[in-house]
Length: 135
Image (cartoon, rainbow, N blue to C red; front, side, top):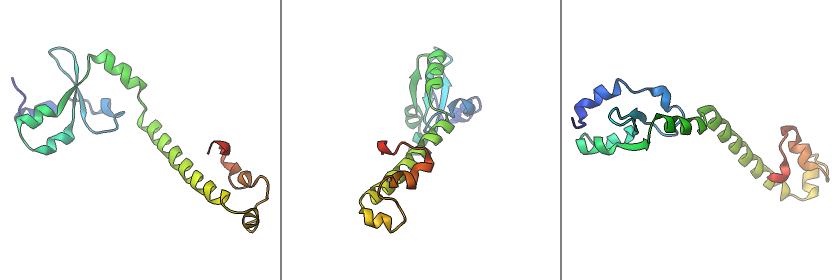
């Protein structure tokens, strides 16, 4: 039986939303019950309009089977890991910009803010516990 918009409601009743929590984009992972392959359903592509062509195009092969899908899923960052990485990147970007500003100042300008001539980077940012030489 071909996929149709009318069958969409039936399909949406049996997907597992917990299985997709490691994806960066919305969508659903489905098992093709005829061959065991994992199919990814991209719900955002359904916004292109209600038609069988759009419905069919919203699905694409994702893994040869559940074992391969789980192997890849286990290697994927969790949402928390992704969030922590993004926070660290944002903090490093802000710190890099601040360091660029202070490095462009003369020792006299830094001294006007109470910073020592030597070790001013540590005085400003040492409490963060970051290796400033890498920024």
